[in-house]
Image 1: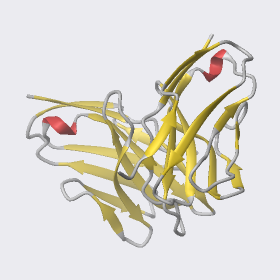
Image 2: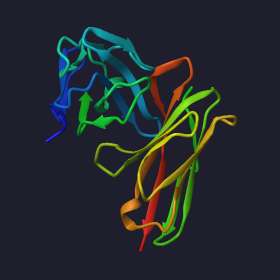
Image 3: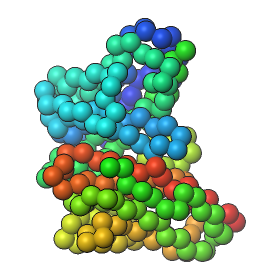
Image 4: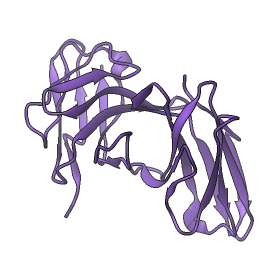
Length: 114
Length: 111
C-alpha cells in the first residue's frame, strides 16, 4: 500500500531533550516536506527536500533540523525542544515535476513539550 | 505570503452549495486545495495551474483567476461527507518549490 508513515504518533517530552520524528514513504517520491499545524494558523512549512541531500527552509525552520540521506526517509530533528514547539506535525511526500504536485500526507505526530 | 481564505467557517444543510475563496498578494503559479477531516491528515482535492490546466476531483470544481491572484472552490449539493476544514495552498511564481497554505475554512454540513 502506498503510504507515508510517521513515528511516533504521539510524544510527550520535556524542554531541552533532543528528539527525532521519523518519516518514510514507499512511493519513490522526490519531494518531501514537514509541516506544523496550530489552531488558527493553518499548515506552515518547516523544511522541504527536493531530493537526496537537497533540503531547504520553509516558513518556520527555527528550532528544527532535517536530513535526507535516503530518498524514502526525511526525519525531523528537534535538538532542544521548547514549549512553543508543541504542535501537530505532518510529513508529506510528492512526485516532483516543475512545481509541487499532489502532496501525500502522513498520519501526523502530536508533540507536547513540557 | 500566506494566502487569505474566506469565509473562515460556514454551516450548510445537506444539498446546499458553498464557495470557498483563496486570495494571494503575490503572483501565483498554481493553487492546491485540500480537505482535512477532524483528527485526520489533509487529503488532496485538486491543483489548478497557471494557464488553465486543472487536475483533481470529479465532484468538486474550482476556478483560478491568475490576474486577480484568486481561486475559488465550489461545493455543489453538499453531502455530510463534505464536512471538514478546507485549505488552499499556493505556489508563487519565482518560488515554485514552496507550497504555502492558508489558515483554512471550516465547513459543517448538517442533515
